[in-house]
Image 1 (cartoon, protein in one colour):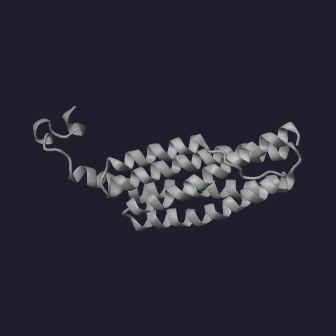
Image 2 (cartoon, helix red, strand yellow):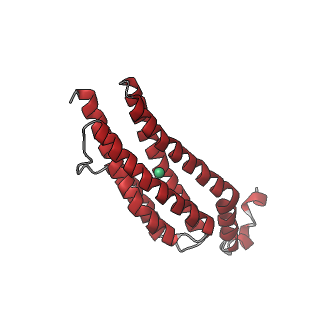
Image 3 (cartoon, helix red, strand yellow):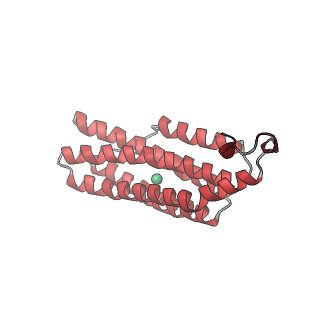
Length: 181
Ligand SMILES: [Fe+2]
């Protein structure tokens, strides 16, 4: 196996570990979500991710590699941080906003990783491999876009509303910040 193929196999193994970790994390996030739309978006991506894992297995096979035991530390950190944040909040619109924030970090990490792998495969003339990974890249971008829309249209406005309802009483002293200046 030449050096560049070895490097691609390592990248694929890293992505394989990242997807497996994301696959375990998403159902936990779903349990903490309140809005049905957030649960649905996560569920849809769980199903997509299962297909993405299969694509990675196929990609590794194409290069003569196997998944191995490599752990993606980057994804581990992203998930750990997101779940730590969720511990500090109760269920509700604010929690939903945090869930989306965490999931979008996951997607962005994956977009970076697949973007690199597609470019490498293309550079090596591995067209079939590049196309296979480009399918996943497109799904990750779609998911990211969908989560942005969900946040902007539904979850962030709801979070803002719930935050205003529970605003502390000190507003009575100083007035609202927007008018106090
Ligand atoms: Fe993803």
